[in-house]
Amino acid sequence: MELASRSAARSNVSLANRAWNIRRKALLMGQVQGQGYIGQALGIADVLAASYFHALDFRSEDPEWEGRDRFLLSIGHYAIALYAVLMEAGILPEDELETYGMDDSRMPMSGMASYTPGMEITGGSLGHGLGIAVGMAMGLKRKRNKAFVYNLMSDGELGEGSTWEAAMSGAHHRLDNLICLVDFNNQQADGKSTEMLCSEPLPEKWEAFGWHAQRVNGNDLAAVVTAFDTARALKDAKPRVIIFDTTMCKGVPFLESREITHFVRVEADEWDKALAVLEEGKPA
Amino acid sequence: MTLASMARKYEARKRPEGERQATSAMIASLAAEGYDTVNAPFGSALIEAARKDDRIVGLTADLGKYTDLHVFANAMPDRFYQMGMAEQVLMSAAAGLAREGFLPFATTYAVFASRRAYDFIAMAIAEENLPVKIVCALPGLTTGYGPSHQATEDIAIFRGLPNMTIIDPCDADDIVGMVPAMCAHEGPVYARLLRGKVPSVLKKHKPDYRFQLGKAQLIRDGRDVLVISTGLMTMRALDAALKLAEDKVDVAVLHCPTIKPLDLDTIATEAARSGRLVVTAENHTVMGGLGEAVAGGLLSRGIAPKFRMIGLPDQFLEAGALPTLHDMYGISVDKVAARIRAWL
Image (cartoon, rainbow over all chains, first blue to last red; front, side, top):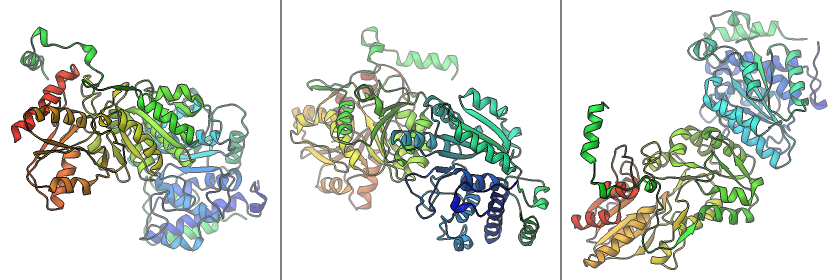
């Protein structure tokens, strides 16, 4: 199935190609530093492609355009993935890719609003994004601004109590302009998320908190797009969450099959190999 | 603590029947003798500011009534958010509203802002220099509920936070003056609050007094002692100065309602005047508050007067009636006067 971008201006490139481009840029950035949260970036690439090239309204030339949909990266360490999509979206210049994580770069290892155009918030202290999203969604409603607020968070952040304060708050204030995206790759610093502090059953939990909940395969673009469409079109006066089950390192099989950890080790000679493997899987 | 040690502590501090004060004095009105009071000065000042500035909204975490924000909420219900008993989302949502161009006033108790919501204030608000105004009741020792409600270290916590402006108002005059100043200031502000019937003190001592953000002001001059005080301790210092004047001790009181940034120019100029004992006075632990800030500032400038600090001890404080506790910890008018007299 060929999924085209929603915006006519961006419709020449398929979402599969966008996702592939995001993966490639993330690998190139990882290669610059010889490390990085590449497992997460490869895993979330499809969700980011669908976010920026199907769901979100934005203007590349004006990242602070008042009518834009807001995209909050609660998980600061996923910055490498967001930089890749911001480049793909024309918000960050592609030639800055080689500065990733270096002194004076606009692309630090953990995402910060004061460094990077298009980075809405400073993430990294986990469990912050959803609460800020609640306030922004309340603010947009006050302004009668029809934009959506998206908050991308990790499964690990479901362990933070503040996430659930914000979840209750979003439902209490009937924030139908708030869409939370949970990357469920079942991996956090010390091991599997479900073995650290189990947050299951997830859709039921969010529903009990007053949210409309969906759970889909986050590496199945068609399913991801349908979930975004459902969340956006819903008429209920409640916030929406989409839980994306994703595979760490998706798109580079030899890394996928490695014993995956939060911080995937890639040896110096493996970056070129990973890029070559990705090349083989390039969509038509 | 064992039952035996608890019993020993109880016996040791037990006071005679007639000297025991009732629980009703636990969150006592702070009105000192001889001063008029203003009802809910923060709520009224915020309404007035909000009439002039559409960006202002108010949020609280189930403490509207106890931070005088209910006055604002009643007058402007469509500009008020009840966030429930959830201080972390209170601060994060205030940050989100500020991102969207609003000027949020978020209220709770000082203990909850400084202890429970600190990371959210630090990262969602201060790191991005967002104009969130945090206004907190029960600063220092203004309740007898014990450590769960006594914010004895809030100033120390927030002094370490870059971008944060800290205000400790003395009275209703300061509170009415600080609200528009907080709105005009671009970054985040943490303000301590006196609520309910708040005395008007400063204008009685200095009729042309007007709160100025970042400025220390001499409320009264004196040849023998310079008290550098903040918050309600300026009230105590002024009353202690009157008592000491009866004994021919001449006490100057320099009021520093803004603790960060501290007006070190004025403080240094006053402290450098020769021969006076310099005493700092704060409703806060002596660890990391006004006293240490003044001491560090003066030493850095090569000024080393005879120096003493009045403040709360580095302890979890007792529960009880406020007047009893203020006496016990040396911040009542009588104790302040006695300590200064003893240091001379």
